[in-house]
Image 1 (cartoon, one colour):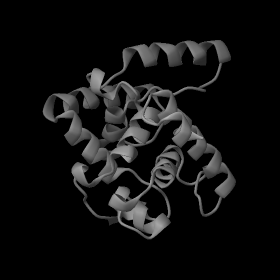
Image 2: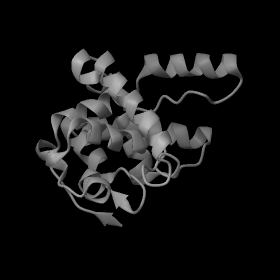
Image 3: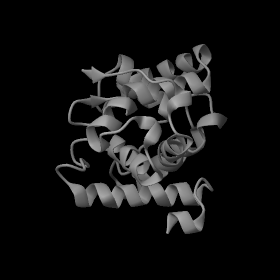
Image 4: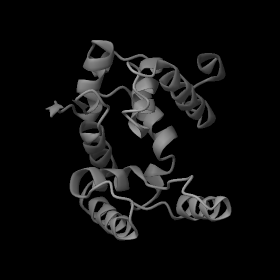
Length: 178
């Protein structure tokens, strides 16, 4: 794997905010499982009779990436939740965020934000501007189908959603969002 470690203090604040605004808005307020989000997702899925909404926290996603498979089974979800709780008991929130940013896959062989910044923008992660950071966060959801190389239009749409999420959570001012 093309992976290189970077400490959280080297990751731009706007990239961290983009990730939290899009993937786990209550990251600093839960213990590995966001029960409110889980209940909301279950209701949406029940009423739509499909799996339209996910509710995995960043910690659950990290648990899956480090220890579990991507299979969509109830057993895996239970293991993921239990592992997330253990991760939360062992590490600080910032350590969890740092691990996530160093392990997440961005497609095209890039694991972690350092390699992704190099792969997609040819620059160190510290030099990413807000739209570039939002693009990396956009890719996280589905690296293969949101690739800015293969599917630039899809990636741009998702990037704009990430920017909106930043605006909606107060991480981005209206003028900067526009």
